[in-house]
Image (cartoon, rainbow, N blue to C red):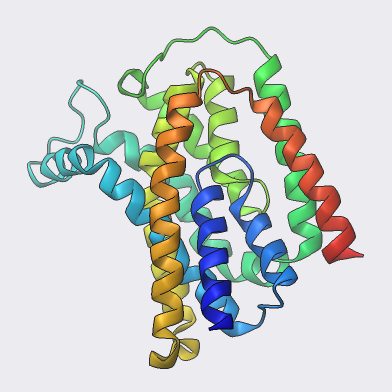
Length: 267
């Protein structure tokens, strides 16, 4: 029962933070440490629970993904109305290539409390800079994003390979710096996160398969379900509030989290 409670707590943390610019990795490492839920079993759980957050976005945007799949099948990859497969390819390619090449290095050297702390701080600084630098907005909504902007957002997504930077924090900041509105960048981030996270999660699961057992299935399913439900609520709420929320508020929160991280985990 104790492990199931931990699974619910961690699932809620994952669902709440995965798509907000606050670093789900930082929150998961801090929470797991506070709950004394560590080791290879815990790492496998963290991989599985991400699927819950991915499935939430897939459900919320199922019509858009269905349209993209139809475009892929029909080889209609570059139509001019809205987000098409080419937007996703351009946005995903940098992270896919670099992530595959450096996967072992990232897992071995960057998934530590110290590196996450650095990512939290640097990511917060990036968000403040992105908000204060005034760039003319040329894409008010997600369907106005150009191929060049899609690639630019994809390049900023590379920063998220450093745990603590946050995928949404990096891509939303990047979007602002290359001329998209905050809402357009956020929505595009959610869309491209599905194939990127799904692929990364499957790769991690394959590499961690020796630690996956049927005995832990209830634990994993409970965490996945909690992440799925909370992520759906978090994404809808964030999109509704995005025009009112300033990135600097999230940056301040990240700095506070880094201080907590330093006190409870690093020191």
